[in-house]
Each structure stands twice: as structure tokens, then as C-alpha cells.
Length: 543
Image 1 (cartoon, one colour):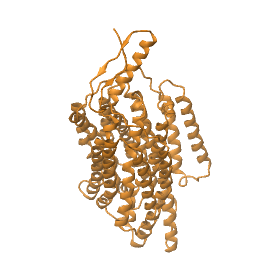
Image 2 (cartoon, one colour):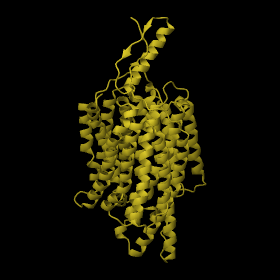
Image 3 (spheres, rainbow, N blue to C red):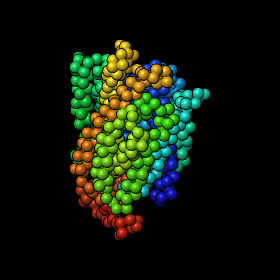
């Protein structure tokens, strides 16, 4: 495909990715107001975020399997349709239960976009050229991430619109993505007999849900050392063991265990899981810190996230361009992991009195590290697997990154709720105020309605608690660095996934022909100008 054809094909993909990013970021600054308006708790705040991540995590492998059976363009359009339904349900929600359910529907749609967009990109663009398009991905990511909080803040602060429009505003972009995909993306449908492993999918989702429910409720609804903890953790572990048992025996597993025999896939998967825990778990509560600990409006909170996004955009774009020119990529993985760990460590020093200039430097450092690391983990894995396993490798990395984000958000959200409750109780005792008993202490406060002495106590509590989250997230980033160091650098391939698939199919047919003593002939393919010489495909059977 020419550069122009690739850009045309990417237009619908980029619109879809923009919708997915916007849906998450536009709600970030609105969530404190939404939770306060619906009278929900800090645990509900966590689950509004976690439910979408969990649904996305669970369905990524399923979307990958469906892409083996049906047209990828149709599946992308279907996932955008799910996004539209989830957005409308969320916009009309009048209680937190329906809001969480709507986020699950949005998460299912996001799972399709996450799984299929990268598979399609790998199918039409060679790994060596992917860096050229990293800037486009980075620009869409940056615009969606920057515009989302700003739009969300303006909508929340505008009395005649309100937070419900944070969900409605993504609908026209999703519909635009569906139309663009129909007009610009043309891919062949390769059908093969596949039996979807629904039992394995159920066991994986049930096991993860049990562990997430435990991390969300332990310490609030029941003690960490209790029979509920034993039941949820024991049940979750047993379900995941059963999932591994099933996946090892079915012909078409949701997560093919054989793919982990590839060292690069195994190490990038471990790194993606750890990055998910560190990044999502640490940053998802930043907006709450801006609004509650620093006392900023939703609009200002959106602007305050700019340094991190700009750092991510610049580092991902520059690193991608250099990788395309040199073909060397490991140095950027290692540097990204080091810088990301440093950024999380610096953010672990913040409190309610941290100056924004210093805070912006810390966020920019974190963004630079994430920009060099996350996208190139996928590139390294896609470059080192056969074309027939591109979808599986991409889905596995997306699955474990989302899994890490889900676990990190749930676990660190529980830590935040406990630390906030403890700090508030200590502050109120020191000030001679009565400490509320029961569930009220776990609710997210409406800062505008609090008296000045109590507001200062709440700001201090959220400042200290947010710093703790980054302190807990930093070791996970350090472990990701260890995994990245052991990845072996291999030259980037110069053929696209579709070209590699055709070559592998030809080689397989040639092998069958040789086995049956059929005469074969070599076929020369015209030089494509990238490798500096002619290339030969696999031998093709005569007749």
C-alpha cells in the first residue's frame, strides 16, 4: 500500500481510537462531580473506572478470535456501535448501578477497538515503517487526552449542559468513525474454522472479577484478614488455575499458552502487565487530586494534565521516527522504563501544597517515559512472531496491559479510600471535630459545600493519599525495567503482516509439495526498493 492509501485506511481507525480515548478522558474530570451528584462512595468512583477496564480486558481476546471468523472492518464498526449504546445509557443514568453497567458496555466496545486497531495496523504496515505513523497515533492520543478533560470540565462547569453531555458528546465521533471505516478500509476476509473457547473466557473473567471485588471491598466492607477475603482470593485463584487447565487443552484457546514459548512475547507481556499496573493505577486518580487536594475546577484540572500528555506525544513521535530510520528499538524501551520509574518516584513526593511548576515537571517526566515504552513493547512483540500469530500476540499484550490497569486501579483505589479515611479521621481528631461513623466517611466530598477547616483537612488527606499511590506504583515500573532489559533486540522486518502471511502460506504449501515429491519452481518477486535487492518467495508447486 502507498503512503496515501495507508493514511486513508487509518482515518477510520484514528476516528475510532479518538472515540475510545475521549470516552475515558472526558469523564475523568467529571467523575468527582458525577459521584457527588449521584450520592455514591469512593468505592463506586473506583468501580466506574474499573468496570470499563475489566470489560475491555475480558473481551480483547474474544474480539481477536472473532477477527479470524469475520471481517475486521465489520467488527470495528460493531465495537463502535457498542460504544454508542454505552454512551447513551451512561448519559441517561440516574443511579450509579446503571452508570457502572453502561461503562461495561463501553468497555466491550473499547475491547474491540483495542484488539483490532493494532492488528489492522500490523497487517498493512511493516514493522520498520510503523515509527513513521507513530506521530499520527501520538497526535490522536494527545488530542483525545488533552481535549477530553478540557471538554469534560467545560461541560460540567456549564450549568445548562452538565456532566451527562460528557457521554453524549462522543456519539457523533463514533458514528463518523463507522462511516469512515466503511469508505476507506478494505481488507480481505480470511476465514478458517475456529471454535471460540467460551468456558475459558468465563473462567478468566470470573477469576479476575473475584480478585478485583476483593481488592475493592477489603478494608471497607470487611477486614483484610476475614472469611470473605479467603473466599474471594481462594475462589479467584482456583478459577484462574482452572482457566489455565482449560486453555492448555482446547484447540483454540482464548489465550494460546504456546505463544509464551517466544521469549520476546513473554517478556513484553510481563512488562505490559507491570506498566498497566503502574501507569493506570497511578494516574487515574490525578484528576481527583487536582480537584480535591488542590481545589481546582474541572476545567483547570483538565489543563493541568497537559505536561504529561505533551511529554508522551513528543517522546513517542521522536522515538518512532528514529526507530524507523535506524531500525534500533531496545534502547528506547530501556530508557522509557527508567524515565517512567523516575517520574513515578518524583510524583510520590507531592502533597496538597506542591507548586504546579514542580508538579508539571514530574508529570512531563512520567509522560516521556510512557511514550517511549508502551507503544514499542507492541512493536517488539509483533516483529518477532509469525504473521499467523500477529493477532494473538497483539491481543495477549493488550489483554495483560488492560489486566494490569484494572488490577492497579482497583487495588490502588482501595488503598486511596483507606488512606483518605484514616488521614481525615486523624485530622478531625486533632482539630477537635467529631469523626463520622459508618459509610459516610467513605463518600467523595463536595468541596464547595465544606466549611474551611474541614476542607483543609480533606485537601491534606487526598494529597498524602495520592502520593502514596505513586509510591506503590513505582516498584512495578522498576520491575518492568528488569523485564525489558532481558528482551533480545532483533532487526525490524520490512514486509507488512499481509505480505508475511502470504509468504508463510506459500512456504507451507511448498512444504506439503516437497513432502509429496511434487516438482517445484522458484518465483522471483520484483524488488520493492526497501531491501536493496530482489527477494524470492517460497517455492511454488508446479501445476
